[in-house]
Image (tube, rainbow, N blue to C red; front, side, top):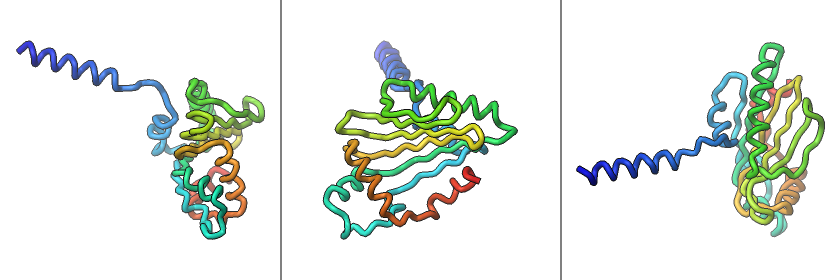
Length: 178
């Protein structure tokens, strides 16, 4: 009987310890993916439509470090400004966590963007772009990968310019731009 009580107590303790109630972008994405004012999109590297035979070794390495991109956008309108402010403040609070290291910030508090990352300088697990504009809403983009670094991101950006992006995968975001 004492063993069962002890085992149950240990299991309950492990359950409470393993449950992380801290807010994170991943949890925020999961909680809001299906809500009516949000647009959620997962984008794979195949969106780039690249000819691998024309890529340099450095470009191939950068592409291989990129796993996927998650996009969550909130479409603001006249009727949901209070919710827009609340949701935008939630994202800002999450990004203040020290695990999200800010690289740069552009614009003012009402309109602007920031770029952050998770990981170390030479092993970045995710890049986060948070852009917001009071008239349109906001978008959070998570670029997920393995062994990404600032050079691979810059190389990836240069490859993006040359790619023939499959716009069909980005169709849901057109609602936000209108």
